Image (tube, rainbow, N blue to C red; front, side):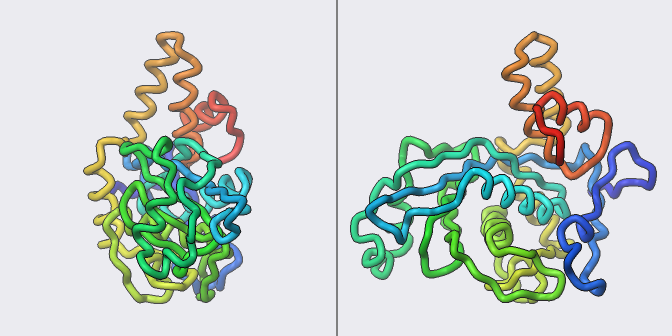
Amino acid sequence: MKPCRTGSVFRVLSYALALFAAGSARAQESTNGFAFADFLLAPLRVHLLTATNEPAIHTTLTSNDVTRILGKVNRVWAQAGITFYLESLRIEPTANATNYLENTKEDERATLLSLRPKASLATNCFHVFYLKRIRPNGVYFNAQGIFVKDTASLRPVEGGLDEPLPRVTSHELGHALTLPHRQEVTNLLASGMSGGWLNAAEIRQAREAAKKKAWIQPAPEVLRQAEERDKAGAFVEGRRFWQRLAHLPLESDVLRAARRRSGTTGK
């Protein structure tokens, strides 16, 4: 972990101000500054499950909702120097909607995993599936099986997130990065609460887990690949790499250029 120096070209935006502006002045402040070279970029494939004959599955979320949710997820995970980029968005029919509610009572794990369309599964990214109803707010089985209900509700805590879905998504991604529950009410891994904070040990553990996955890359490596493709004239392919950098919660000439090249004007 490399805290940013005052006046550094790369400066982490204030996590407390960006995420919890509406929270109490006594809300915990983040002191974890990460430089560009420290950030890890993790691919996230989002699935909006549809099932016209089963309203308990059929999500009503849209692509605009996904953009909003992911923006807040990344403000949460900025405290750990991790950014999740949208590898792809799939709006797709569930693979198996038969007797959904009855089957979840018998074997929730098997039933939920059976909903996943096999054709859109991959082993080189995290998969988050949004649907209408499951018993918990969200559940993590493995990197290819993270489920969040779009009707999630949480108990608000001082300085917590202002809506449930980004917090539940961030919480389940914490499990995907090996973090267990910790029932400190303002903590991201507390059950059923709106808090979003991680302690130093959790940050170290999540980062170590991320580094073990070959498909999670350091920001400098993504920058190198973007520049290589531009140099070779492969601008369309290069744009995919610039897009991965565009949402890092930092300010620098390099990242402003990444936002221009990716067509992204904001963070």
